[in-house]
Image (cartoon, rainbow, N blue to C red; front, side, top):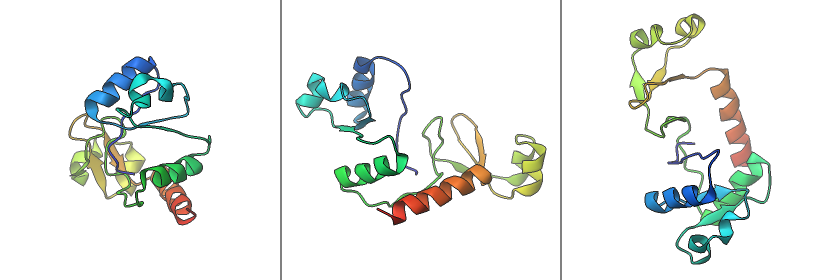
Length: 138
């Protein structure tokens, strides 16, 4: 959605909390124990504990709890590095994407950090459809 975010899949709660405090992040989680750590209880760290497994419901809860509007810029940051994407020339992308993609796509974006290349393929279409559906039914 274009928001600055960092994903943690594994690791101890203390490490996640330490990084979130250092980077000034809000922790979004289904793990109810994180909210019981001292920084969260004291208000030093904001934790939003999702009450649903549904991504749509989690998005709804996030917007409500943070009181934000869905002013998003979908697919504008790298999903690996969280860096803003830059336009990439079609010729420069040709040798870095599958042959079918090189033949059928005209718009490419690249992460300036990890050099990952992005394009508007079927995944992009499906995620765009879902986001529109979820955000229209808030």
